[in-house]
Amino acid sequence: SRPRHSSSAPSFEQSRAMAALQKEAEGMELHLCPTSQSGYKGVWNTGKKNLRYEAAAGSHRLGRFETAVDAAVCYAKYTASGAEAASKWVATCEARRAGGRRRPAATPGSQREAAPAAGLVTEAEGLRLHLAAGTATGYAGVWTTGKVARPFEAVAGGKRIGRFASVVDAAVCYARHLESGPAAAREWLAACDAKSAEAQRADSDKKREEAVASCAGKGLQTEYKGVQLHLAPGSKTGYAGVWLNGRGSGYRVALEQNGSRRDLGRFNDVLEAALAYAQYVQGRAAAATAPPAAAAAAYSSSV
Figure (cartoon, rainbow, N blue to C red):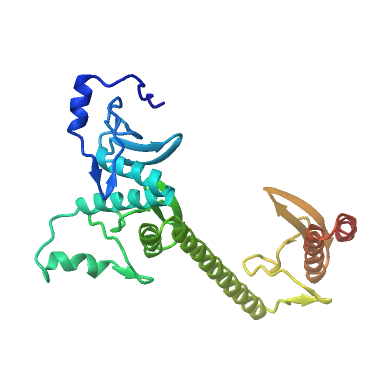
């Protein structure tokens, strides 16, 4: 827990130290506090090596910084303009730190200056992206997650904004957060989520069409007695939920769910077996969306 500021009057040494503190920065009047370790109100020493100072307002942590002045500016922005202004300042400091890790820039037109642009996108969605040479992604505020589906994450001020399928989308999110605040970053995250969902649906539809084409080539029926059958081109029977009866001729119908298998019956004809599986699945789907009374009837009729 953080130490409390002392309410006693400052000593002579504390008053002299306070006189040497910076009183204004970034157009903001900083809040001095001679009884705190940092000399500024709302600024605490974290004990960390890199980000030694933390700005906080009450129990709300605003962000961590390399210098006490940056943390004091964050606190001043929070008290003057609210959380969004403080969040923008946190993102600005983070981008500045990322830029400071780069090597000194070469003369215009040199190979070193052109290298980042050759491998990275510098602008997207009308925004200038924040490059950070030497980082894993090449962009400030963008980290790798190690996940397969969404391998990139946008982070600002130590707070996670969202995860993305592409590094450019994550960099755009960070740039939006920096330019327009958290609300704009969240809007971009929602747009990317919708785009990803649409891509997944398109991929699923494509795989379904390929499965139907493959089954048609094998002579399998996609419909029987007015019911759409569930195809499984990779199975021995060609139909989902239909297995070869290991004890003799015929087919066995079963539903696999949560690691267990429910036996639905045995049939001599593969189409009758596929129909039984399709009707069972259809009944379960109807029961899930119907009112309680109708759901019980739909479920019982499918069993």
